[in-house]
Length: 86
Image 1 (cartoon, helix red, strand yellow):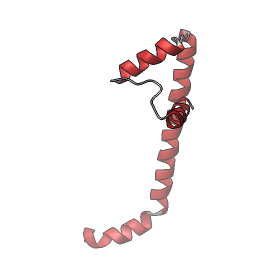
Image 2: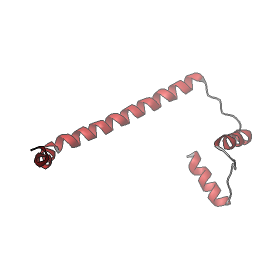
Image 3: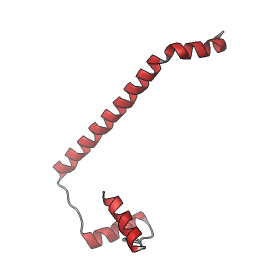
Image 4: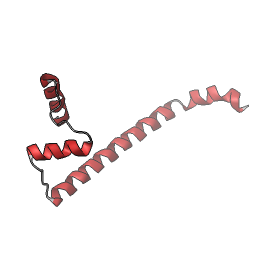
């Protein structure tokens, strides 16, 4: 949401909100204007765990869909590859 809001504001204004020569420079300008955000270590750990679990679930879903695709098309694959194998 933050990135989308910045893009919309930049399109509306016609110039960048935080002009900078590098990513570090842009982040430094953001923190100067908006202030630094502080998270507690427990909150950061909780967010990291949630993100890791979401990534693991996504990878498991991808693996399951690939397995289902291969399993349902094994006969077709064997038929197509049989001339190459003989």
